[in-house]
Length: 288
Length: 308
Image (cartoon, rainbow over all chains, first blue to last red; front, side, top):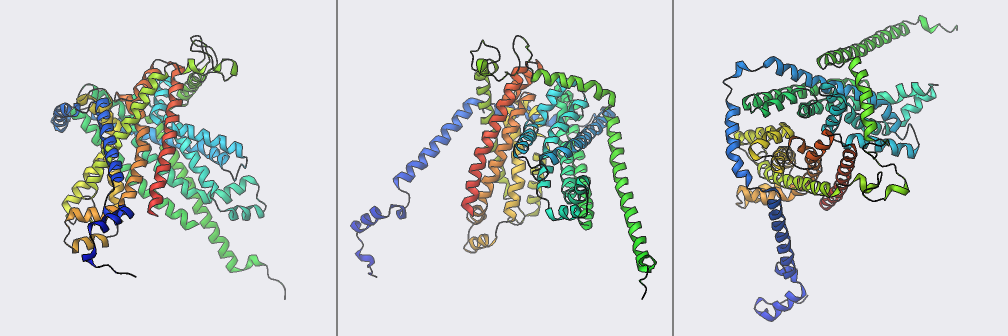
C-alpha cells in the first residue's frame, strides 16, 4: 500500500479525487438539482392545493369554531334536554349494529363455505364469489344506507340492511379465509370414522374456525356500533338522526352531549367485547 | 380366563358418568349461549321495529329498487345500465344503452373524483405531520414526563374516537360547505389513528441508539432525530400509505354531509333517483379505490423491502 503525506495533498490531487469519487465530497450538482426539483414540485403542488381548496378559510373559520366550542361546553340547560329520546336512540343504534351483524353472520356462513377453495374446489366459482364479497365490502356502509333509505324509507331498517350487506361481504371473506387455512388432518380423521359430508363439516371444520369467527364477529359488532352512530346522518335511524337534527338547529350544547353519549357507549361496548373475547376464546382454545 | 364384561368395570362406569355429565354441561352451555343471543336479537328487533311485516313490506321494494338500478327495462327512454352488446355499446351520446350515454357526465365525475383524491392526499399529509409531531411526546419510553405522555395520549384518543363524518358535519358550519370541512375532519381523525400506531412503533424502537446519542451530549430532539427516527420511519411511511387508502374511501362519502368530493354528487343522484348515474358513480368510485389501493400497496412493499 502506498501512503500519502497530508502535506503532499494539493488542490490538484483533491480535484482529481473529486473527479473520481464525487459522492464522497458531499452532494453533487445532480443530487442538489434533484433535491430542488423535488422541493419545487412539492411547493407547487401545495400551492395548487391551496388554490383548489382555499385554505385561507381555515383562519376565518376558526373564530366561528371557537364560538361553537364555547357553546358546546355550556351545559347549563342540561335538565331541559330530551334525555329519554336520546337514550332510546342510543339503544336503537346498538340494536341496529347487533341485528345487522347477526343477520350478516347467518348470511355469510354458507357464503363463506362456498367461497373456500378447499370446500368448493372450482377456480372460476371461487373467483366469482370472492369478487361478489369484494363488491359488497367495497361500497361503503354509508352508501348502502343511502341506497336503502331510498328503497325502504327512513328508519332503522335501512341502517340494519346497510350494516348487514356490508358485513356479509366482510364476514364471508374472513370466514372463507379461516376455512381455507384449517388443518386438513382433523377433517380426514372425522371422515375416516364414516362421517358424512355434513358431519365432517360440523366436527372437522367448525371446531377449528369457531374461535376465529367469534373473535371476528365481536370485533365487527364493536366497529359496527361505532359506524351505526353515523348512519342516522343520512336518515337510516339511530343516534345519528338526533345528532343531525341538533346540528341543523345549531343546538351545540346537545351536540356535545350526544357525542359524549356516543363515546361512552363505544367505550362500554369495547370493554364488554374485550371481556367476552377473552372468555369465549379462552374456553374455546382450552377445549382444543 | 373368561373375558370380563367391560361395562361392569367401575372405571368404565365412572368414565361413562363423567363423560355424560361433561357432555350435558357443554350442551347446556351451548343452548344458554344461543338463548342469550336470541334474546338480545329479540330485544334489538323490538327496539328498532324490525318486525317480519316490515321485512315483508321492505323486500319487494328493495327488489324493485335494485331492479331499476340494474334494469334493462327502458326508463326515461334508456335502461340504467347498458345491456352489453356490441351494436350499441360504443354508440354516441344520443344512443341509449351506450357507454357514452351511461357516463355522459364523465367530465363532472372526473373533476369531483380528482378533488376527492386530492382531499385524501392533503388530509393524510396533515394528519401524518401532526401525528409525527405528537407521537414522540406520547411515548412513555422516550419521554419520562408522565403527565405530558398521559395528556397527549388522551388527546390522540379523543381525536380518533369522534366519527369523522360527525366532525365533518360540525365543521361545515364554521368552514362552509365544501371540501375544506372534509379535509379538516379526515385530517383530525388521521392524526388520532396514526398517532396511536406511531406511538406503538416508537415503543418498540431500540433504546440503545438513544442512549448512545445522549451519552455524547445530544439534546432530546437530537435523540429523537438520530436515535429513533431512522428505526421507525419506514414503518411510519407504511402506515401513512395504508391510512391514505382508508382516507380515499372516507373522502368519497364525506360529501354526504356537504363536506366536498364525489359524495355530494352521489347523494344528489341517489336522492333524485337518477339510476344510471348512481351505477356510473359507484363503478367509478370502485375503480379509483382499487387502482389507488394497488398503487399504494406497491409503494408500501418497497418501503418495507428497504428495511429488511
